[in-house]
Length: 55
Image (cartoon, helix red, strand yellow):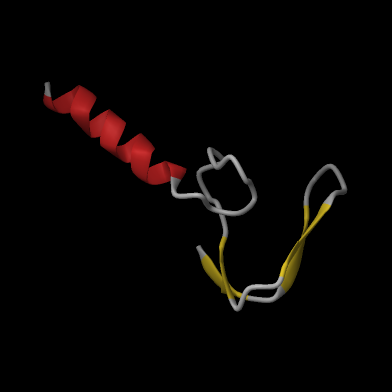
């Protein structure tokens, strides 16, 4: 999900992530290594699952 920045994101544990970019990709799959920001891990997950089902 793309949102306009800059912004602050408060995580459930109380930590706050500050982002100063003008556009920010928010992770929706919860697989990102830099959660809550997207690192495109969902692309690798989709590719892996497609390879398993096509073989």
